[in-house]
Length: 227
Ligand SMILES: [Mg+2]
Ligand SMILES: [Zn+2]
Image 1 (cartoon, rainbow, N blue to C red):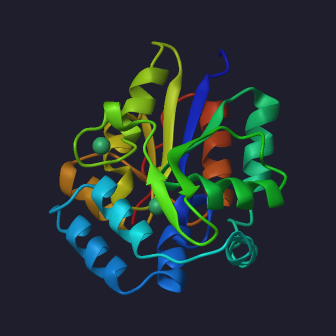
Image 2: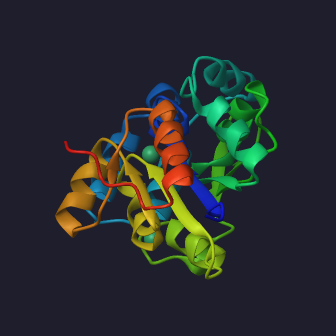
């Protein structure tokens, strides 16, 4: 059997990173306004663009603060092994995030994973302690996401590659809709279940690696594991 051609998309917050780093950042450096904004976003009242604009406006942080904050945020213990395995096999791996680039790239750099492509919103310092978001993928939005993950998967669809999505939450909704294989944990499990998407439950990237190796060997789309 030919080796399947996998193309892998990973959410960052709560997926590659153990914590929801974006939320932790606002928890640490924003006024309570960020809580209201996230609540309205979760209820579907505002887009993630509006949510990020309000959160960033409520934030005071220096470059040094940001660096120290990133140092405290670990990644999944098996992610580096996973990413390097995929690289050896020639499978593209990319980070898709509806969060902000500066903490993602800082954390990836620390882990020697700066070679991974990152598609996310941007975080810009307007002075030494204030930030604002920018939205390079806004023109492709579904109206709810700032960086709609569905767009990136549709763009990667080449009639040959198997699109694999690994995520954990609400920002992954548009991504999973376009994926061939979905790895889900936490809130994303509920979303997939409610919307009738087949998904594989995982706890960490050791699970994802093990299941994808099995897929390479057997060729069949992995059967969702009982949960
Ligand atoms: Mg997430
Ligand atoms: Zn979307």
